[in-house]
Length: 199
Image 1 (tube, rainbow, N blue to C red):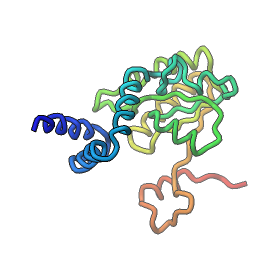
Image 2: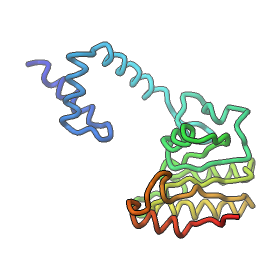
Image 3: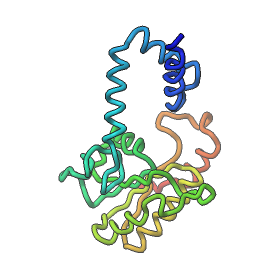
């Protein structure tokens, strides 16, 4: 009986993870307790260590346990290319899927005045300072194709043009291997609106 409150706390704590509801949290907790206590102790140790020691990179605002992340401290990365993304997960996605060799700036969100998220909350003052002191040749805007993402992209374009920085945006549209009949209307409309000239 005395273990029940602690078990309930464990189940409730696991629910803080995205996509984990009460049943999934219960299955996870019982699995760790019944079949993998060693894994649970390892998870608890690493989780405690990560929560205490992972912070933000001073240059790009990505997650790191150092002052500068491994990308910003790598002298082989191309300083003339700067890719702006909304979150650390976007950095991971680009690094895993592409051969991009430039640097990043992580906004940690997108402009949303209704939610009280303006330029200051996205660190755009830090980005403006970077434009003035160590401007890249090209700013690659990789915000999500949402209303807020597009508004953020427009704001970034204006910032870059004030500093005479070339601006590009990642392409959005029909996915590779996708079929037009199964593509949603807004994606298809965006793809048509952003079509490219073929030489």
